[in-house]
Length: 303
Length: 196
Image (tube, rainbow over all chains, first blue to last red; front, top):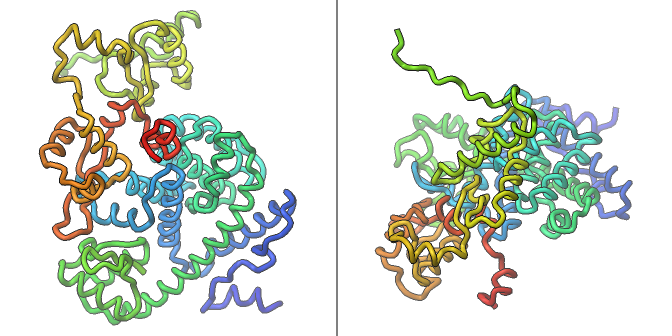
């Protein structure tokens, strides 16, 4: 019975970051990187299984989807940042086109919300991907073999070699393969934000097999995801703590939205306009949510 | 009593034909469907007229091989396939017929505005002004919108929440692109002598 094992079970559990022996840079032999990525993934897996049921997993996936979308836009030679993406999805009204940044994020977000363990998931996932890629890749998903990270690497390389310009779709499929192989119910956007542009180009243009790069990216991705989880977990705990103080009608629903979505305008909350703005201001004063843009108008809020 | 005559389901498997003829029939169907459509035909629509699990790509490749040397071609644009005349016959077509209302007929300046929107979308008129150093008229924007090359995107977080503009599927089709990913990157522009 060591103390580390105990802390994982205790009630006011904190999320343990990856131990230093996994994240410290080491000799980059194929064996080491594969071993370390496996260890990192196992730690992330334990965290995501979340026996206490308190991890704000939806919010975690939404924030990871934002990072993945920003990385994919960069791969497509676009200049939009995470801030531009938030503006595009939050400020679009019904009927407006979202533009490339908004569409990229919405694709990741949709994919991360699909349950990968219920029937028909392939069709739903296929609709998010470009049709040509989906046709080829969805059947390929069933024939992958090896460890979860190897499977992710295989589909990434396969898709990029056949569709060198479909980096986003290839990275989405890699995360799908990973989630399926580990047995997660939903995709966790991991690889996209941690593969270097030049590593992705090396696969699509030079045909590299990329195993090493994928393993290294996976260590960084697991580290990043666990850190982000610790961050949103702490912020959500704070929000939950102040929630009973909120009296406004609809504030419970508003809190639930903050607990599952990256960012929103007050107008998106289920309260009257002015009440929604007041609620956001109050939550900021209480330190439970943040204003994410630094603007004085068209503000966006999130935990 | 139903008065609607039932349309017999299309025989997609063509089990009674020898393999060679079956393939030709499938090729014919794909070419016909694309020929009949004014907008790019997505893969899913094509898959409905051929046998289960048959590769649309292989059929398309065979059709394209047949069309080598013909004045028209079958191309992949904006998530589907489209038939169009080859570019080198443009002058002949223009000389022979009044195609005024089909031709986009954009002047250099309009193309430049369109390119600015494509690269920097979502972009407002103010954003365009920053790029071109002068106001872009509402008329010009209106013309691009009327031709369905741009559409309104998310509002900009500026005073007055002005509309932004984004490019459309039609834009991709008009410029022969499958997605915005096909826009020339910095290197491509330098090679073409358009950027330094």
